[in-house]
Length: 146
Image 1: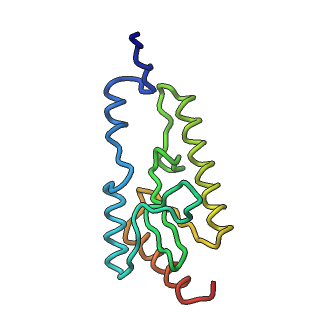
Image 2 (image 1 turned 135 degrees about the horizontal axis):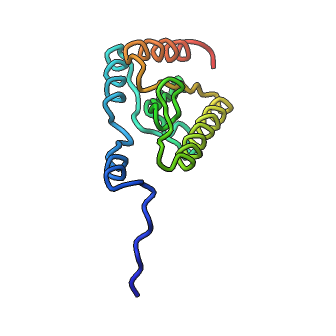
Image 3 (image 1 turned 45 degrees about the vertical axis):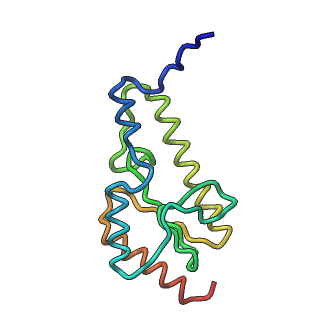
């Protein structure tokens, strides 16, 4: 029995190719942020679950300080400055982005309930400034009472 392939969610082969090329880790903005944080003397885990029971990974994890850093892409997480809904399949993409935002809020709430600090950085933000904010938060949580 021959089955026909499922129809693609992409509007064209070019769109499908572009979407499949998006990296889930080690993107240019993520690498710039990691370099900037590392230059400030901080060490971290990459692409790790802060909570084993939570099936979500943070881009940078500082386990001792209980800080999880998420580098959010402007398209995928609905950046208020840069996100625009595609004209093709706009209902699909609007629901997808809204679902991502809901999941982000849920992740932040679950981490907070477990005593963690979630830091969200937009991909368009200056990595050096973001690194200083991260370092300040990690050092404050490492030195203070938990």
